Each structure stands twice: as C-alpha cells, then as structure tokens.
Image 1: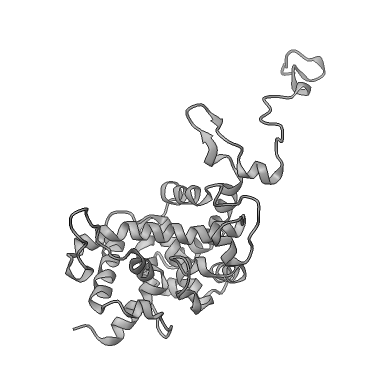
Image 2 (image 1 turned 135 degrees about the horizontal axis):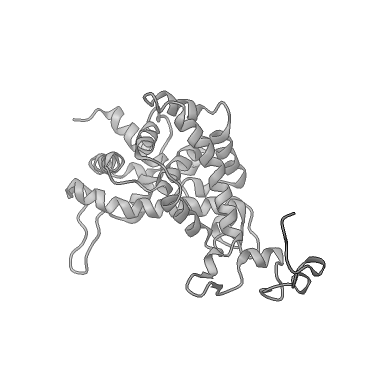
Length: 299
C-alpha cells in the first residue's frame, strides 16, 4: 500500500506539470467508441493508459505553447486576453506559430533520451506543500497512481517523448512556483493562465545564472550529464521565445510548398506593412551589371 505522503507528492507533481488537470479535462484517459463508454482509468490496463496519455500530453503541450507564443505576438485571442495584452490585429495564433513551434521542437531540435528522461524525472524532486484545486483532489488515488505509472512508463520508454511535451511540463512546473494559483482556472495548462509579467518571471527562473531549478536538476543527474541540463535549459528558454517570434512573423503558415508561393498575406507582413502592394519579383535598379559591366575577371 503506497504511503499517503507519496500519494500527495505524486498528485502534486502531476498537477503542477499540468498532466493531472489535462487528464481530468479529457474526462477519461481511455478512448471510447460509438457503442461502448470508456472504461474508468482504475479499470484499465497500464498499456491502455499509456496509449491514451499521448494525445493528452499533446493537447497539454499545445495549450501551454499557445500561452507561450502570444508572449511574442499577442492578438485578439483568449490567451492574449488572459495574460493581459490583447490586441485587435492578428497575432501568433492567427499565424499558426504554435504549429510552427511544435513542429520545430519535435522534428528539428535534437534532444536525446539520455537527457530528456532524467530531466523530467528530476522535476518530481521536492514537490510538496502546494494546495491543489478541489477538482484535482476528487480524482481517486488509484487513478492518480495509474496516471503516474503511465507517465513514468512513457519517460522511461525507448520511444522518444516529444520535446514539446517536455518543455510544456517544465514551463508548467515553474509557472506553479511563480504563482501557485495557476493550478486552477481557464485553459488546460498552468502556464497559459499566468499574466504576462508572471510568464516573464518563469523565464527569469529558467535563464537566471543561479536558478534554483537548474541547480536542483543538475544535482539529480549522474555524471557526465551533470551541468549538461542546466545549459540545455538556458538554451531552450531563449530558443523557444525566438522560435515563437519567428513563427509569428514568417511565411511558414501560408507557404505552399508545391507551388513555392504564398496562399495568403502572412500575419507578419500585415503587422509590419511589408510589401503592401504584393510580392515584388525584382527591382529595375538591379537589372544588368553594375556600371555597365558585362563580365568579371580575376586580375
């Protein structure tokens, strides 16, 4: 029988990285069918829960990163309003910056399992003392234990856990350090519930030279990985903001790869007033060679 303190720590960990709230919001971790209702988590096999947890983590990552991209380019969306910086013109979500960021993180940025697994496991260290919303306390302990076991199975599996999910859990954990009230409210993720100022404080903690979180993670890693994660965290903290800004401003969302043309005017062009009369295919000033030259020779 698990010790009560372990159950409290397990529940707090899952809540603070956003997984517990996302699972509750999903209604059930097991996919249903048209003819049969989903089985409750406690009656499911661990393999079923692991499989069902993947889309829950994906939705949690998307919600968290929605709250991230609007930091760089707010718009008329609910996430921008929640952080206190709504704007009337289109922003990051209209530019599909979240899709760009997820694709970049999961398919481009390398993040080896030997770092991802101990990093995420280390996040569970020292989590206690944060009051949880009643909706999360009502979940049966057997469900919490099963969910915890499913997450650990995913982390320890040979299959690569998407980097977007790891970053989302990290952002949510630090979000609850900055503002414990972020455990409850609108949206799936604690980070998305923060004000703009609190989100900035999350990144201050990740990038700070003496960040307690960085020290905690390093202390829980074996050599030669020690000190590697701290550098990765500092890089990630800056890179995700840069990727979010780039995804909000570039043509990625409307670029047709088959025709190599854009299908609509990019959000970044609208905000900057770039090419107000459409795409320019060349400038007359650059026709021909400089000063009438027709060739260049080595002398």
